Image 1 (cartoon, chains in turn red, cyan):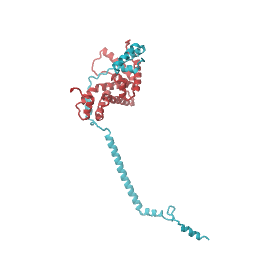
Image 2 (cartoon, rainbow over the protein chains, first blue to last red):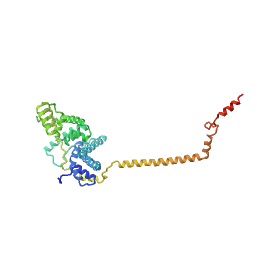
Image 3 (cartoon, rainbow over the protein chains, first blue to last red):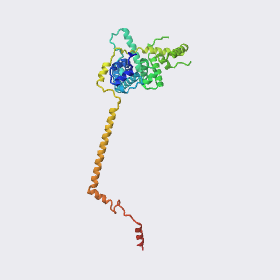
Image 4 (cartoon, rainbow over the protein chains, first blue to last red):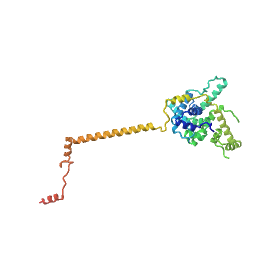
Length: 188
Length: 151
C-alpha cells in the first residue's frame, strides 16, 4: 500500500503547497492524452504542443483553486478544449485555417515504405473527414472516440448538455460513415 | 425489447456500458436485423477512425513546460487579487481627488461671499423695493388704519 502511486489529486495538492517534486510526474502522466486531444482537434503538432504547454501552465497557476471533486483529467481536458477552440477562433479571425498549415504525420522519424505510405493516406482521409465536421461535432467525436470518454463525460468536459452531446455524436458519426464509406470494409 | 438507441450503441463501442447491460444489448442485436445493421455500421466507422493515429509516445514536454514556468508567477489562491487591488486604489484616488476638489470649491465660495462686491449684491437683494427683496409684513392694525382714513 505504501508504494501506491500518488493520485492526480494528491499531486495537485502538493503542487498547490509548493512541493514541485510530483509536478513532472503529473505532466508525464497526462501530456500524451492532452497532446493527442489537441493534435486531433487542431491538426498541427506545433500548435498542439503550444496548447498543451499553456494548459499545464494554467493548471499550475490554478493549483491552489483546484478542488478534487472534479476529476483531474476532466479539468485538464476542459482547459485543453477551450484553448483549442480559442486557437481555432484566433486563426479564423486572421482568415487562416490551422488545418491548412500541416498535413497529419507521425512525429516518429522513419522511412516511408509503401505500407506506411498507404497508412498515411488512410489517416489523411480520416483527418479530412474529421476536419469537414463542424467544430462541435468534431470536438465531441475526438473526446468520445479518441479520448475514451462516454457521452456523459464529454458533456462534463465541454459544458454542453448530455442531450446536445448525444445529438452531436449521432450526427457526427453518421457524417463520418458517409464520408469514409470507401475505407470501411464490409465485415458482414 | 425496443430498438437500441444510437447513443447506447456508441457508448457500447467505447466500453462505457456495464457488462450485464452490454450482454443484454448484444442479445438484442443478434435477434434484431435493424439493430444489427446499425451496430455493424457504427462498428465499421469506429474501426476506420482508428486510422487517425497520433503517436505521442516519444513526446516529453516537461522541460519545455518547466522552462515556460520559470517565467511565470507562483500559484495563486485568489486569482483576482491584482485586479481588486487596482480597483481599490482607483476608488481611493477618486475619493481623495473628490475630497480635495470639494474643499477647494468651498474655500473659493467663502472667499467670494466675503468679497465687498458680493456683500453689496447680497444686501441689494434684501432691499424692500427689490423684486426679490423682503416685503415688510403687514399687520392687522395697518388695515384698520387704512380703513379709518377712508372718507
